[in-house]
Length: 276
Image 1: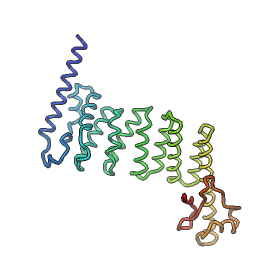
Image 2: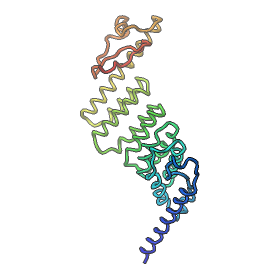
Image 3: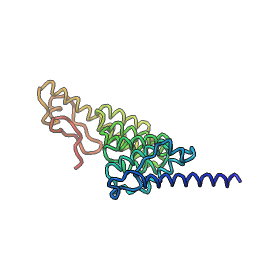
Image 4: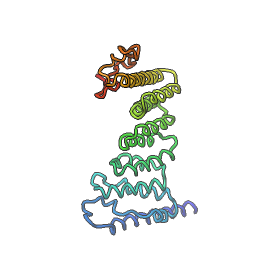
């Protein structure tokens, strides 16, 4: 009898939740409703979501997640997207490990004003799913692209690396992190970080790759230091890297392990040459 009673209670809870959802659609805000996603017209307070699910926060998360899954995001305006963000934050609070919720957040909550909600959901998912690297990747991408913080983005990618089982994917993630580190740190600091990554990498091609990247960063840092000394002594900016050799500030222009070389930006500052 217990399994039957349990099933009956679950059925009652589900029916009650469906009823609440139906009422939210029928009696929610009406303005311009014909243009709005009818699935997202009302946000029920968290405590009521839990009570509707008879105290089961995971069931409450699934029921709210169902509303989000059936919504038509392409038809949503700013108000609907804002409500969707809050609903997804509710699901994250109820069950931070909810997989569909963080996928949807990464895909849909990708406009600047909704990024804080997406980051909240992705960070909680990353903490609640210790073997899943994907929330950290999306979280890191948002840090890099939307929040303009390549250092924090790279840190998130490196946090994801130990969770990855495929060696090729791990290399790709570390390579991307190394590139972001180069853009966020000084050349000398970036060289130390990438060099540390190389020290911890398994012997092989990827370890050599990281060592090459660390070496070119060290060489760039050396060129930048020499250019700073040139400006101090000559009172002008560099016109050519060869002037560093002529002034005996360096012995020779280092060879780039990636065969791209070094050049000067419009301010006379040494930088990596762009790929031809």
